[in-house]
Image 1 (spheres, one colour):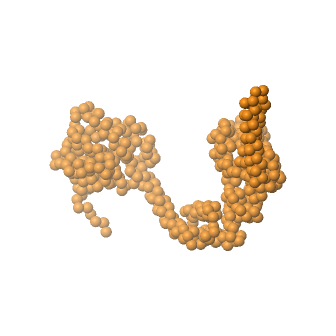
Image 2 (cartoon, helix red, strand yellow):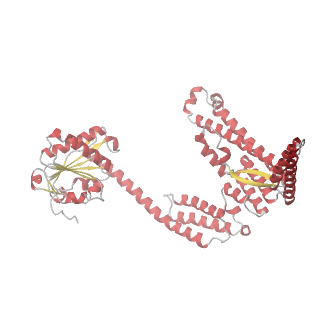
Image 3 (cartoon, rainbow, N blue to C red):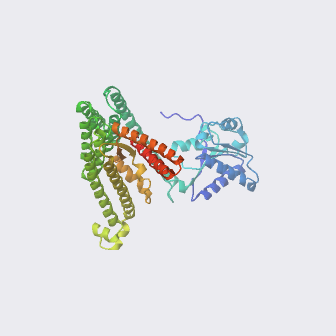
Length: 512
């Protein structure tokens, strides 16, 4: 049943005005406002945001003298949380009064008019943008007319800021297109909201699973892997095309796979849970169980494939020393294999750089028949830059591994390993810095996230030898000092002091 309004709708709606640019739009608003003021009306100008309110207000005040000062008062109403609403609502608008407001701030404002204004045509409403739907438009332009008071409205739009305006189209057509787009947007929003609500239930189930089903022995790296796997499942859950059965199936697969992996490996979970070689290498070089640590690195090697085997062998060298400080020969073998693999990566980067930096080579590989065909191949420059950075990257990594080999060979019978972030080693690589993050982050995900440092491991007897060497050196230096006091022995004393100091330094170094 349609319920009639208390009073008849008394709005005169003028034809929409579409302006070509901002200056024309602003001047048209000012002219329309002063035209209504000269008729003895009050004017309400509704802008889209606060900045437009301030611009329109300044323009009205600047041009008021040009129109005989017919604007008596100008109210700026740009915010909902101020006292402007109370000031406007406390007075009836008289002839020459103007309100400049945002659409949001103007909502709910009770605008009252004097009898003179009503007699001259009431409130003139100027909407300075195309509202997103017909409801907002009617709410804006019918401020007083919807209560039965006289009024007129005009919509003045800058075509540069409106996607619905088509030259030559009637107002009704433009409004209809606008309403259809708005309806589609609302439908998409409702679909997304419903989808999010459906997913929330599975997120609550995931939190309950993490709280009640995880073993107490699970370490942080393994928990990270479960969160990583949940992120992959959540991405699948977010697909709007999923039915309720699809959502239950996707979550069920996630929960079953994690529960299955948690039930194996005799209390060690990283090997079965991890998808990411980065986490496998993290666990592999931190785990105290030698057998299990090797299994982790083997799994990383399986995931990475032949191209990045050098990364795994690099950390196998670290593991060999970490688990057995005398396994220097084994560590050197692993480093040698890693260097060979890194050299292959360097060779591939060099070949790619030669290919992408040469028009002839690229044409030959891609089958182009003429140099003019190269114009459309716009990614050549970026490939060339990336491959050049990769060349420098692998040269740096090879130098690190060779330096580690030398450190092991100098270590003697026992060695120890330290880890430093890989970033400190590649900070000095210059040029093509726009490719640094993507290349370095990729190889970090492949597991190359740390650099190694080897040094000799001092035994108890090494420290004892160092202590006695430092002691003898100190005594030698003291003897040299006494010789310097005896006439004719000063040169001998100086020699003894120098050799004694050198022995002290070597002894202290051996103790450290």
